[in-house]
Amino acid sequence: MSIHVKDGTPLHGPSLCDSCTHAHIEKGYRASEELIVCAANYPVHRVRFPIRECTSYLDRNRQDLEAMEKIAWILEPGGTKRRAGFVRATDAVSDEGAIELILNEGN
Image (cartoon, rainbow, N blue to C red; front, side):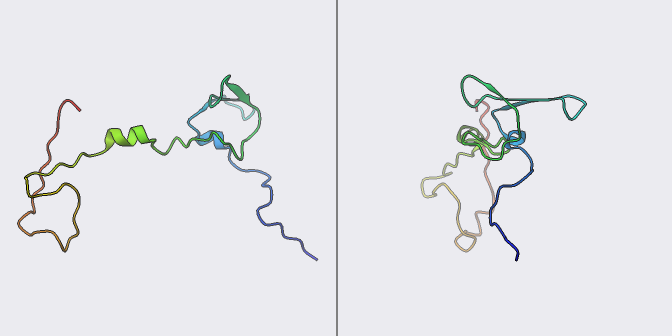
């Protein structure tokens, strides 16, 4: 008789701290020389084991809302009859093949 446990506890795997924004990781030359400090809560604390789940996890590979707003394009209409934004290829007028790009030095 075999027993299968769905979504059981994993025995090993990468720690969430490796890709978390709140983690401060120091690694030495040996595998035992590793210090991980979590700054998600106050006071900051040392993480002594690999983390599988964390309620304060924030992926450092994804942008937050403020960073996305910083790099976002602001679309403004070029004339009074045009609307800002994107259009379907079928709705595009053939004489509007040019793209006007205005860069502000202040932003």
